[in-house]
Image (cartoon, rainbow, N blue to C red; front, side):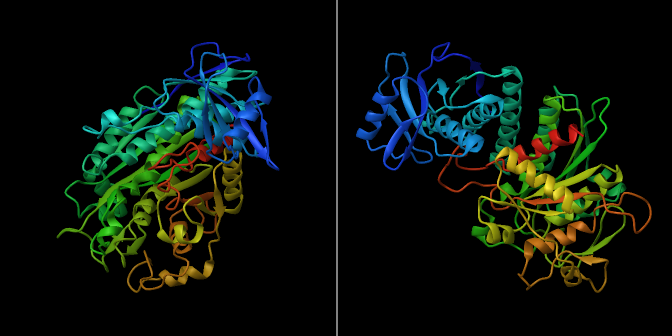
Length: 494
């Protein structure tokens, strides 16, 4: 895990040694405007001379101007906090190989300064655990970042940015780990290790306990693998907390498709199918690290979906926690099966809201591309999630839950089917309609309202495109971590 040391200095120059000082500039109507730092007119002329265009991710290195540091200029388009977060993260990411960086960006007030700290912390990430011969040629991420600016409480801003960066780095580390080494048992062990110094309680169900307590979805998906499934509950319950947010994460440590086998190219990258579980783990630990006055419980639904003589078959029927039966018509629609168990378990605690996170459907990526995550569920909670996304700079988009789709997953022999083979229309929405069936109600009556619930399908943005951007490098993006931390913060204020 790589997270830089962060400091804030209310001064015009760095307080300590910095290898590179970063300032910002913008271009409008072919005119270069330097937005921060000293000697701005001279610097603007230099930038014009080198053809600086001021675009996103444009970083220009120039000789130092007496500060003892070399100088870098990052393009900063209009955009407030989001633009500052992006620019700070882009600069720090591109300055990998530099030990210490100082950022002098035009941030005013705590919100903008916090965005700079957050972007910088997120941009300093690398995963080198499996590099041997190529390790020497791999640049280390920036080790320390000093941000120039005035804050009312710099300690709180640094603590929050660090907690977010630790959560994101944990997600990226877990997702980057090869499925040979990260499988349900070792994932559970990693969750316990990451939680060891925080005020949380970790409970792990092994395959025998899962069978005794009726978690048929997780067991069914995992029964084709020699590495049995797990359910992990990570509970943060601070004294005096009045509200409870439950998070359920899909944790398929490798998805071959099971007997509904994926093509060879379709299996590449399927170690990413546990991103949802990694995300909810990172969020609950961030809530604990920040001592938020809200109860947060994460449910990690972990299984490896493999083909074998013991794997579930199309037309098999699984009994989900609570008794509802599901006919499996596509073993590659396995994520919704493990989430069903997790949603029922989460509902049994009667939380104020449930959010599930999953790399669930390729259909979500077809609909929204690789930058936006789909959100569907209870209207009020979806609105809260979207607001949290907007406030944290995460790209989330609302999607409907069409009631007419429910009839398309009726089963001839069970309560519901997990898929409608051959019909590709609205695949992401159909998955949401399926999951809704397993969200509990606020009371014992059959007509009691469902517990507020939101479903995040992060299949598109969970893995960033090949070209890095902003604070996001190649590989896993840790999408929705920041939005869910912001959501937990909003719950703590009510």
